[in-house]
Image (tube, rainbow, N blue to C red; front, side, top):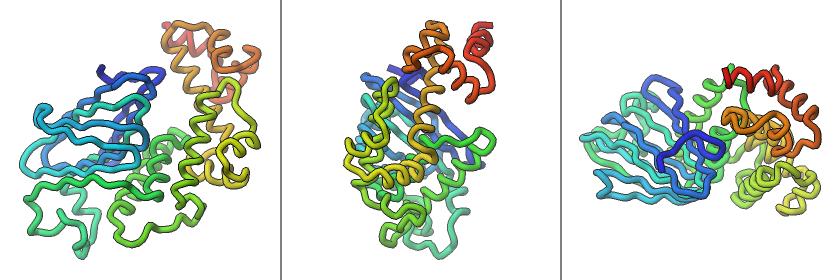
Length: 295
């Protein structure tokens, strides 16, 4: 099945700089989704699997490179194009960074000898790597994929995070601490924050209290609040509200549901509460939004 943007799957490409693009894919369906994209020659491909499992196919399917959760893959072939043809398993999230070798060289100083394809003797060599990524990288990936940032600064925010991601990827020192929230360096704490996110999204019509969520994931309430804010740039319930409003737009876009039905599906006891939340988020009512979709 080709990957299509709908209620449960999405894939978008953003050019953050000349010669540098970021791809963000989420397959929250129970089926395999396929995404394909042409990639020019002399482009480095960094693929990160935040959740689930995926298979990259190259050379018309003769080569299959699996990529598992919390692992990254780096591909480079200076002699030929490597178009992306990837199968995303059910409930899989992907971030890919595509950067031209020319742009990549410009980012690093001349003494970056520890990066293989920056040295002259390796400039014409193929390169492949598949390794688990650090907790620091996991934090940045989650921020790129899910942080709630105003549209006016979204491109700038993602650009900064992509370059932060590349610097962490090639950092040969020990995993650097995260000054804003040191406990996120712990893989187990990140896992618990992700678990909390899954819980509130799965139960968004009747989410647990913060105290209940804290007990369920086994993380102190203070660490839950701090960690969630660091990972997603928002509070737990503000994040959930944004997600509900995004789901509301997706449902209205299908033209299958009226305003009352959307509100009920999202867990609002009255349509007035849903309308107020929608208007606060988007500056218009769901009815007017639905009218603009239908026109």
